[in-house]
Length: 473
Image (cartoon, rainbow, N blue to C red; front, side, top):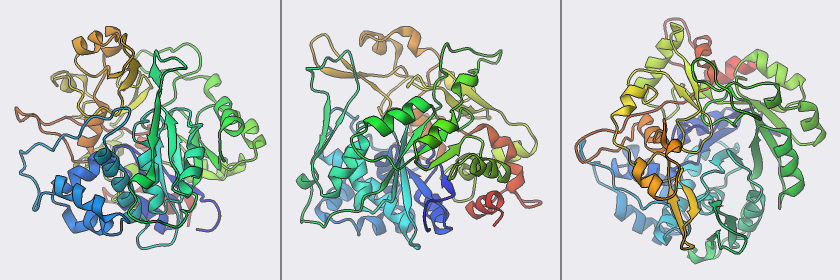
């Protein structure tokens, strides 16, 4: 890949944008992006499933600090894989200062995912994080940089401090990141810390600096990132409300249509003239997975487009194969719908949910699930009356959430996105009573257009098909 990519493959879900997908896209000369969300869980569950194909083993053998590898491997690896009805081992919940062993796991998991995505080609690979999930930022970014990640992309928040973190990790220096804590004052210690040299077995040369791309949905945020960040911003992905996953809330008062979906208006459109004036590359996202939309984006001054949905259902993505097939069939029949749900996510951000049979997108299916929060990525940090930092989630049991000072109204309609997205890539937790965690599938609005990627009589397509279709190459 020479220069900036025309197509950025979206960093989707938990494990949907896997190393296989990112490697395939980057190998074709565009920018493949792995999802950095919950990689510690995914890595640990892959080991408990026996490391099919030996890919995790191949990755960890290239990690520079092997004493860390041995401890983690012994903790999670199950030769031959766990029994079908055996629950996955539960990891400690993320807290302000995670245990060293959890920092190690996160660092290793990010390294392996990027390393595997980079195999077999010489082109850059990116990794995508959600700013909202702040606990693992530092160890995750350092692990990805150890593996030579070429781009770091981040949205779902205001990642002002990330460029400074990247710059510090180049020379293996310690870095900090501010944890958002509800009710905290200026004098409260809310700082996350990570010191690479506490884990290093030997000195390493300086690391290559990855480019930092901020994912935004407003001109104000773009300008803020350029003027107030502590380091360099290398570009923007401008994401519209038709994109999958979490969407930015509408500007102004939230209004719903008769189906209970959020309405967006002119105020939610980014002024591209103001973006161009910032002088940085930008990519347009949210319904841009077609030749016509690519041409429109380039004509508007964009460097290219970010595409998620088309890649999410291709052969190389990590989404369950039965879900891919079912949704492709439904898309062909024009019998599929994507709902912008204002309540599903505990973050409070609108969340795109595919309406499919057997998914928690069907409220009656999810209604029978016992409320539990045991992964904790989307928990809110808050200051207790005694001055300590504690955590709560609108998706945990209502009485528990209320006892922690939460408003019971915030629990209505909430779903456990953390467990559900892991289930959608074939890693559902099994409860003590044998219940299997239900799934959720998220997608952009243009799911209905997938048929154009299929050959006659086929129900599957590849990442190469997506790129060929959009670029005409």
